[in-house]
Length: 79
Image 1 (cartoon, rainbow, N blue to C red):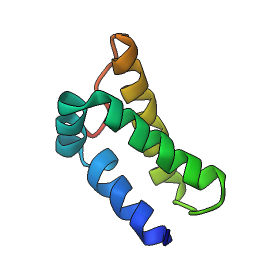
Image 2: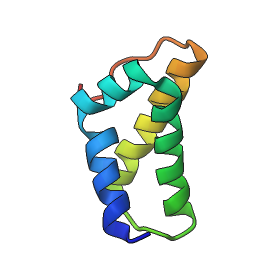
Image 3: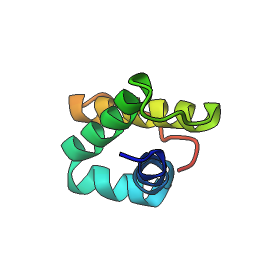
């Protein structure tokens, strides 16, 4: 997969607060898995996001994971 595809997925489904909330409300498992896969792509050197994007992606993944587990989580900074 080309790196720009991962970047667009990150921007659309993780970094955009409205879309992130919508996806998490409609399908929290998919939201969590998507964020995890994008982090995995970075760990496998399939993409190299900038530091701010990686930090936001990591925060988004933690947010979704906590929601799935029923842990009360504060809103992400972009929300």
